[in-house]
Length: 582
Image (cartoon, rainbow, N blue to C red; front, side, top):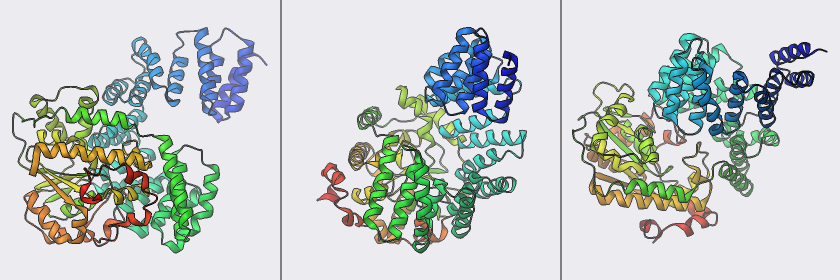
């Protein structure tokens, strides 16, 4: 065959998805013409598509050695480097391309991907703006922009991005799936359900669409319908790890055990050190527990946490330095130059995860004039540059933060007096919260750290923010850091922080609801004492527990697992946790 025939064969094979054949033809062409960069560039594309990124990089570099200004090979190299987690190296290539070919939308698109991967979210947003300003920019840019906006806490803006993508293609199933979650986070529950139902109608065999529909239904309290959708997703992909995990959590024990063969089959195929493998170990633990195999269930749970700990290890030293950098900014409260709006007033519910923050939010949300917004945490995202880069925070910075945080609020019902942000990790930011919203209310939930740790050990948390949850020694370190930080804030703000003990709350929910209402400056409402009857949508792991009447059954559960918790108990500071460890 001639060089041209090989090249055409390689291109045809790529179009057909036959990457092995494409690679073979491209390498054959490269042997016939050592001066053409096209053949190694195609070989790189085929190798990357075959899951051989390191090999692909070598082919792209070979093409660029032949022709250093070969734009396609440069873009392909940058894209492969991003996929390999080498975004910083990709940026070196893309910075040059952005200067030489600023009209190419894909360069700005790849640059935004690389910037987002290196944690430069706001710079990445600017690059998506440049991409969208170029001719031919596709809906993929809006998809990327929405992902970046969600990572920055700009949920409202993410919705706008996905709506733009749907303007270009109303049948974009991926856009519909992705739009459902931010709509739910903005409390637009009916809209979230409608768009995901549309996605399922357009693509009934799409596992991700079915899974998202099932999750939305469960979060709305429609458990039976949600379980039915999970079962449908499982018929489409019998080894789908997230679906197996969710069903193992939701099904009655008599049905959970039947999932074990599918879970074990999926584990045989799961790649090590992945969240899918962790999902499956959490699911396996639930099925083994349902079968009365407690020791085996505990071992599976340990393997699940080990898997996650390996993916995102907790850096205790860096976390301590970061927290110190925050608290040292506040030797005294920062006084704003102008008063924040009187209403609606934010109520920040803080504490450690699994301490009862969702329950308190539901109690507040049962009040007819209080909106429950879930784990909003937008101020934390807006402060990211300030915190990470050590930028100044004075009274002068407050108005801009207040304006942007207010802009990103969902539309609140008329007559709303307050809204709840129950992001637990906001405990780190109390000084900032009080500076931006001097009249806000802060409720800190205290709970026995041993019960918290046991609950966290059994829970599958996503993202790196809670990476400490996968090791008991890490948990002890983090719990002590939380308690130390709250001691600092109490020294500054005193009674402006309401410490509510979970144990007191579940012992007498009506009395606790009266105290909460009084602290928040609203008239008590009877529904606050029965959050299980009024919970609308729950976007956290507490979706099932919250729809049961409040009870004290989980208080002191740690005693049954005291041996397991020994590393945590040994690491807890007895002075910081005196009310529980005396």
